Length: 465
Image 1 (cartoon, rainbow, N blue to C red):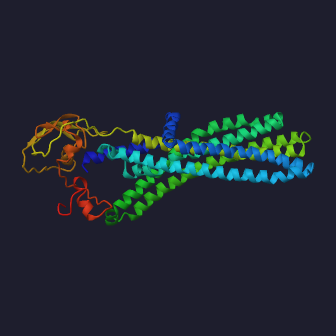
Image 2 (image 1 turned 180 degrees about the horizontal axis):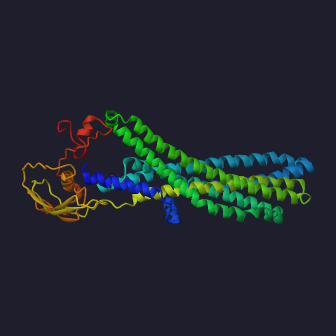
């Protein structure tokens, strides 16, 4: 790597570290969520099956409450044998319906989740393959891999777990509240008094959860980066006796990840505790005022409804954490998907270049560097001519070579191949004219034959290879 390129990467890494210390804000959370839902909507029939199953599942909860009232009043108070014979069948029917609808809702949402993760990873990887080299100079391999793996996995929760929880538990809560209103609207309103307090609390906690989720994802990327660098550079690590240093560096980022995960868990647990305390207060008030107002069956059904209502309220509170983490991951992944691909506006092609190369007043500045890597460079290379570029480290030798296949774009000047501006050539065609012996040795996880035949020779015969 040339000195300007090293300087560029160093500056970008420092800028990334400073940015990680600033408050995190998610722009257009609604837009991000709608964009995520469009991935789920590709499988709208399975999605609709899951939603319908959730509606049935939620309806069974209200059915259980009505059955409790009947069992208590008819079976234990009035002791009506005819009605008691029907109640076991009613309970069995409700349980069977609940089990079947629960299976279809869970399976359909998980099926969609895996499809979404696959689609997001493929879309991200597809765009990564089209991004300019400058993007990879600015982002470490570990951070990019973290976006492909961890962040993409986190995003699926917004389309599946969040939808599943919101639909199921909202319908359950609405159904239970409606039944409670039917039994006694005054006591129901007493229970509902805690709702504004809960809403205010959640509004205050949401930014903190979102920020914790973002920092957690960043720490995973940093941990992946540290591991990837140490593993890829094992020979260098060993020859310089830096094993202890690399361990301490990894332990530091692993500790940061643990700290962020614990912080997120603390906020989540605090949410759960506050919801239960508020529910306990309202439950105590309701029981105090309910004595003497209900029959035994109504009282059992009302208290049962209150207890059943706590779980969906807790779930709806907890889903906020899932949503904020998913939106943080979505912003991270969509930033990669939305990054413009390298410029490829040329439409000319050449079958086989003769090899005449012209540099005319070429100037190149790397981002975040004061001095140009190349300044008004001009020269000609004739077809078949052998040229050796000699100079100090960081003098621009590698930069000159990188400009030929347009790994970087010029600020000024002109580069021509056989008299044609390289920007007028179709990018794939331009790059096919060059044979590169790189300083970086990469062996892909494949056979020796396929490594030799990599690229344009991938369909070549054994004799050709």
